[in-house]
Image 1 (tube, protein in one colour):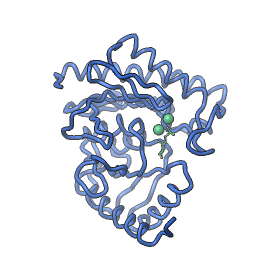
Image 2: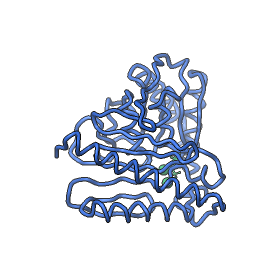
Image 3: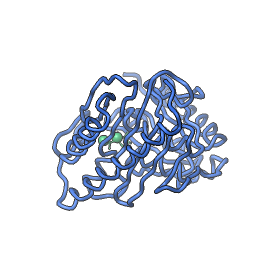
Length: 285
Ligand code: IPD
Ligand code: CA
Ligand code: CA
């Protein structure tokens, strides 16, 4: 499937306006508080009413404006579609931040296609246009394939960091005790080798901070497509490379490593060594 730059620009503008509208609504909802509506993979993996409402708003807008496209939303939206485009949506990325009234949660919307090519992610999809809106700072990050990344309309670029020992590295943790035990062990091995570690609470926002040069690199194991679909394109279009555990692409791998090329390669090696040590030494179930 081929798209002109104009097609992609339209998808990008649409995603950006929608992310901003929904994010603004979600921020207003937060003014009266937020409560856990249900839990998912563990008791710490929460969903609020605002997550559902935001997804509903996004789905309604997509059905109205792009009725033949597919939709995959974290909170259950799933439509096949006929155009080859599937919108991958995280209505609130960073729900725990949202619940506690912390900044940095985001609305993440990505137009994806299948069929391979540069930037194809672990689920076989490739994002061609993307928007992440961070309501707490009123920041809209957008990108389109081959068309660069912007923050509130201005071009952004990854940092020039090239030395792992001086890199500010962000990561995230999953919701199960087993995944967290492994992730904590990897962080333990990594932290003496980097400038510092940040755990800010929203993968989409982490990838946008990386794109804007506010972080030098990012890695996380166990992300779902809606966590990274938009942010990964924004990071890539800002100059980041996206790596898996051992390959130059993330195909088939659940570990995402992102950063400026020279740094990402060093982080890939260091994270790979940390996982190898963990897998060698961890008690087998
Ligand atoms: C989570 C956030 C978090 C990351 C987790 C994600 P959610 O998404 O992006 O930063 O570490 O892996 O599941 O649950 O807030 O949408
Ligand atoms: Ca998420
Ligand atoms: Ca979410």
